[in-house]
Image (spheres, rainbow, N blue to C red):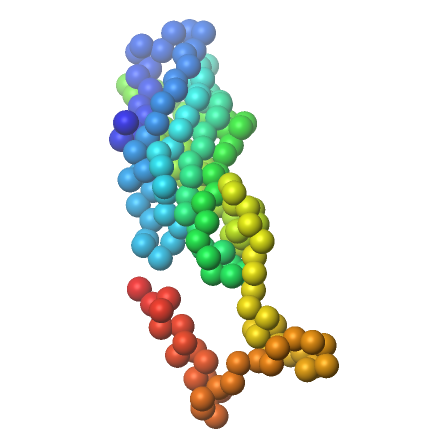
Length: 164
């Protein structure tokens, strides 16, 4: 598995060349509380030079472990771009595509990850007691959890498990 994808312009034929492979997931270098890669970045790309520009098109994908915004459960979702395309201004030498591929994948992260959009989707099951905060007890929803304190901020103490 490669640690980067570098196009050597001197070896690039006029009609372009196809590149296929995997890049080590260490390129993402995400904070531990963020989504984490569960495999390499896969690519199938075609690169072609047009005077002082390198056009790269193709497919990229990478799987990540996310945490659901609804039920706080972890799930795996693959970020795939079937029509990746980017051009690079070039002179001579080599062009490193690694950072551009990394950024493209990260820009396509879901804004609000949900386990019903996972590679193997499942129903988000929110505990009903948390839906009861603003509900009338006659709606058939369990009562909201009781607070052990009159302090309105005491509920935040329950979030200690999410601390880094």
